[in-house]
Structure formats: C-alpha cells, structure tokens
Length: 172
Image (cartoon, rainbow, N blue to C red):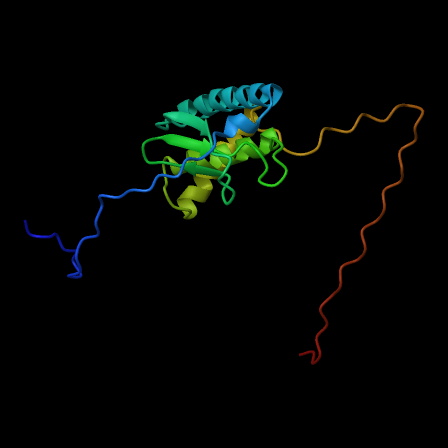
C-alpha cells in the first residue's frame, strides 16, 4: 500500500495513536447550591435568548454554559446556531453579573447574522442590545438610588469648570 503524502510532499503523520486527555467535569467541584444557581441562570439566559432571537428572526439552536477551563473569552457562537457563554469569573469562580451575561449573549446573537466584527455587526449588536433594554432583559448599571425624602435637603449642584480656549498665536 502506498503511503499518503501531504501537499508539501512530506509523509502523512501516523494517526494510529491518539491521546485523549480527560477533563474533570466542571460540576464535580461545585456545591449543590452553586449547581442549582448555575442551572437557574442558564435557564433564564436561554429563555431571554429565545425572546431576542425570535424578535430578530435569528436561527438560535442552543445556549449552553462554557467549560470552566475556558478563560480567554466570555462567549462563542458557532455556525450551527449554538452559543456558549462563560457564566463564572475566571479567577474568583463567582457568577458574573446577569447584565454582563446578557451583553455577551447579545454579542453572540449578532454573530448569528454577521460572523465578523464589521460595521454591520456593530450596528446590529447595538440594535439587539437596545431591544433587550426596551423589553427589560438588559438592565445594566447600579441599582437606582432611593428618592430623597422631604426632610433631607438636596445638595446644591456644583458648576462645571470652564473649558480651556484655544488661543491664536498670530491673529489674522
């Protein structure tokens, strides 16, 4: 039998020996409470993803949690319509804020239509994010401050410092 060769002319590598590395399952290190919390967040994220994908007529298949070993990205989108999102912080292991997860989800949903980061992608991503904000899915920022009571006087507003003016050295 003639040996197969690569386009460079070198012999094709022997594929008879394959090495498989077994990764420990992510959930083995989580407590029962953390697993339940993770499942609840993932279910809510999937539900919100379905709402957004239906509105923009995107072919979303699944939303899954990214593996705990992935540290360099927050999410990834595949051409088959599946999306993986990292739910936990890379160093602390705590769940990420839900608004951050939704932001990542909107980014990955935009990739279902545009698989690059060009201008059309950026505009579409902003449209998805704005729609998510309108329907109450995306609520970034701090919780609102309580309204001041009648007894507490409002602090006077500080005036903004005047902006510097560009001077002409040789007026015309």
